[in-house]
Length: 335
Image 1 (cartoon, helix red, strand yellow):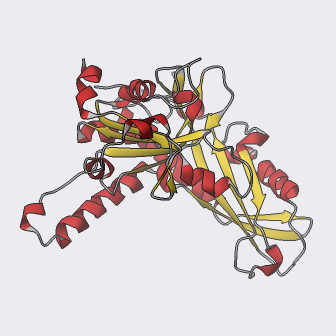
Image 2: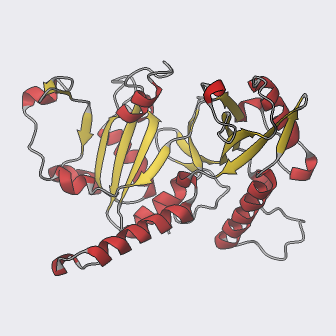
């Protein structure tokens, strides 16, 4: 059994190049007005009141640092309807060690991996139930909070999404040749630091070889592609929070469905960390619906000039840096 397949929900997974996948719970928070007041929203007061509630012993949560909770007021509050959200936030619970079984807790035998997963899901569901719909009173002004688990952090929800997708595709296919049950094999990960996948002291751009070595710890890889995360940069450019080229997007195609399944499960509900860095990266993850590598097989090969200048315009568009494992190099990585 591979390390990814045997991974328990509260255990970290070490990766090559000093990286690791650290378990954590991520919750998306949304705040609404619970009374008729129109007083301005104070982000600091809202965060302080919520932290005080989360540190209540009845919730049985570990001590939450201030940095694990972020609250942001939404723009144009005066133009919003009363039923619309006025603020959003993200809560991280990074210390899950209290969920691990300990000797002397009355356990007659060690829990299996499946039993630990069930215990973790039950705890997560109960926490969401306790937090859903609570009201925070800020000096007489009330706000109601809703809680949601991101889909990229809910493995069972993602599994159901690809099962429904391929079932629907099989049902609506009119071509009898295509009446073959399919399963996904490619993971898409975005919002990861480019330098963490680069060759040390050589380049700041992500390296195909380094990236292949890192993700090979999750299973046997058939294809790999890396590029700048243009979608993330476009989304954050208005806030001037991101410098171009700092983050990358990775497509990883596995040789078997089992490796894809185990890798998805290992990446779900975890943050990427690097030894010697205090940065904790909450990447976005999904599975490929478009057949990225199948389409890439029909793309014309780039000229040497294009390889030399990755930023040269092509058909009026800007070309971004891309690295791809070609078929004639696969033996190199399989040996």
